[in-house]
Image (tube, rainbow, N blue to C red; front, side, top):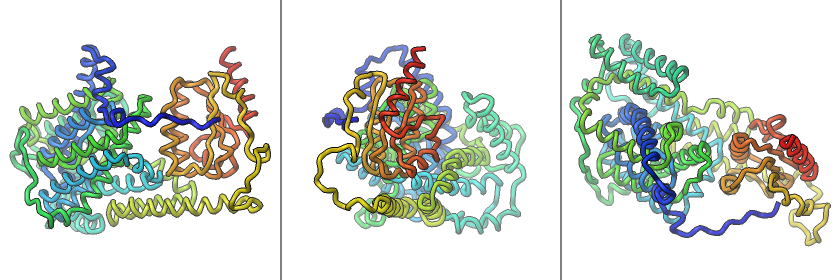
Length: 569
């Protein structure tokens, strides 16, 4: 019930890589064996995915592997997350493809290096927490928009179409070109793509531990080689690819070039920061650990700079590969380092095998990735939540698809801020009998109930009170407090009597915390929520019987005593 305060961490505590922390905790041969298995598992997933992302971005497949090797190694060795796996991400595909189309590949390299410098500065200035001030509908909207762009970019290779000219990166310009090329559909490529999608879906459903992407690539390559199928492969489109790593540098760097590339560099830095911290948060939720945001951003920045110098693509934390790393039993960042080592071994000694991989199968892999990243359930839920959230969601989604990612995120944040101000105005107008500026009066039970010290005597019951609007700007702070809980109690009481309204970002934060309590077997009781807040909670499933609701903290404590009695019975 009393405010929770923590000592300010030192610079060393904030920027010590998690690899150093893990090694200091004690790291033995048994941990290494586990990390070897986890690193190999992630490398098997990253191998086809990195090539597919590079091709969809308008680059050669070896660029994707270079990005995963250089970026993945640095992010794991120097990052602030125990389990983060870095590499090329599907979310970058539209941004990278547009940058290459407008500025050339050398322009992308310079923009990636500039973005890395920006991320390093953001991290060192400890501004990483501000990235969390992005409303939940904006995140869902631009992610769904990216998924649509990724899928439309795969139509050509999924159907084996022959285009009259270059494929435009913009969706509005791309669709008429694809429509005109429909008569050139390659039945063999389409059949191979559909079979690859079906195989990936079946393997994930029946044998989720198996590497569905790699199995599809291997079987697709065998089918093309043995059956002499008339479909495009990496070799037929790109020819012989280089093996190993080579220093690329920053070609054509000049002041005019820097001015020209400042906008794509900012967009790459913004998206890279958002994606990396989202991925780290997912890993924290799966493991109960806590990442160091600013340390992670510095490592992401250095990784992008290094990737650019070796001719790679923008790099960030990847949610799917990070989750695979956790599920494979990784002990710490060593597994991420080893995943980069395994990929380097493949590029150096077996890179020639890439020539046999059919592009239809790689397109099928990205079609599955796009479907999975679209967050369909969350999208539909936000559409039904309120008109304001639906407006923010659709603005971010449509602008990302039809304009660009920067416009989608920027306009979404502005609309989210306006929506917040509107809701605050509504919350004030509800109680018209109260003055705008509170009078100086003594504490009384007419305002908020006084804190009862008896509530803190039972170690099995933990009581927290939230005061003020719980919106996207406060979600990061509240989430951080929840993450720092040590021993989980048997009953957690959250007093929300002082919360005038709750937006979808705040509700999503509470939903994630409720999942954490459920895994620990803790009963959650929310007290004092007004009807508007209770409705927002219910929309995210935070209602009875999943959690218990009460009108006051006193009645919540009565419920807590009953639950403790059930525990002891």
